[in-house]
Amino acid sequence: MPVQRKMSEQEREKALKRILAQEKANLTLPLLGVSIALMAVFGFMGVLDAIGSMNMPFEPIDYAIFAALAMFGPYGFYMSSREKDIKEIETRLPDFLRDVAEAGRFGMTLADAIVVASSGRYGRLTPEIKKMAAQISWGVPATEALRLFSERVKTPMVQRVVAIIVKSSDAGGDVADVLTMVSHDTKENQLTEDERRIAMSTYVAVIYISFMVFLVTIWILNVTFLPKMVEASTSLTNTTAIAGSSPLAANLPEVVYQIKIAFFVATIVHGLGDGILAGVLDNGKIPTGLRHSFIMLLIALFGFLVI
Image 1 (cartoon, rainbow, N blue to C red):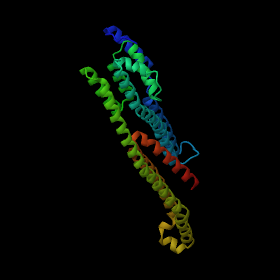
Image 2: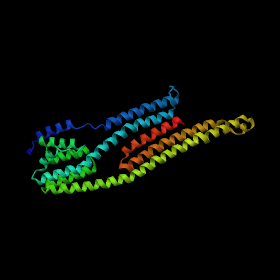
Image 3: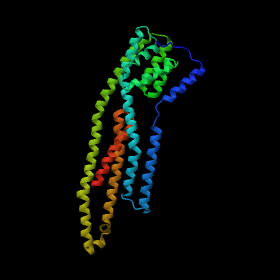
Image 4: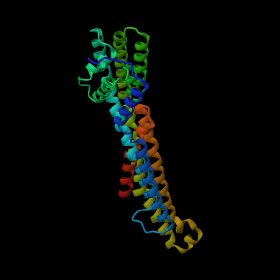
């Protein structure tokens, strides 16, 4: 078993540099930068089309939704994937804590118990445990390895668990009993959170249904009501006397076009707002709601292309 020893400042600095070199790069900022660049490109294309500088294949308003899709899609799906990975790590955390507690009851130190547990299988949590074991083998204290783990995952649950374990270890108490208690408490919190998400999934489905109803309503107006308005304006313009007394009759096709643009803008706002709300109801975080916004905007885009 590895023997925990006190590190000098120079050894500690070298160990931390090796740890940081192994850290997985956080793609949030680069991906956000690419999304903003794509949004700017589509926005610029829309402006060029609007002022007539270039003949684009789509309407200027279409480029607005292309820009929104480019902005929210990659970032939203990346954050959702990251949240899924963290969720899987948190799900296996109680099993890891239980195994470390059992090893501690056999007389192992916290550092030795973590190294022994690194040979187990904990799904997405396994690479993090192996990383902690490697850090301990380099001479990093077990409590420091746990702190670095909490900084990598960076969720309230993991940070709370690590804080309790670190304080218990620093106080010199029975870490095994504390680990068992924390494991049970974490499992109970996860069951409560799962029940909440199951209950909220119904409301997320209601949001999608309401958005589809909104699109169907707009579709009905576009295929029934607005064409009848154009037909009425044509009949009025054919009658010179009536057309002269009704300026709206001559301008009605343009008014109908503006109404369609208003419907399109309303759909974009509806999709963005409903998607963010769905994400907040799902896991309480706005960035993951951007995935729902992307899906709704994509549905709206195809719907209006058909219309």
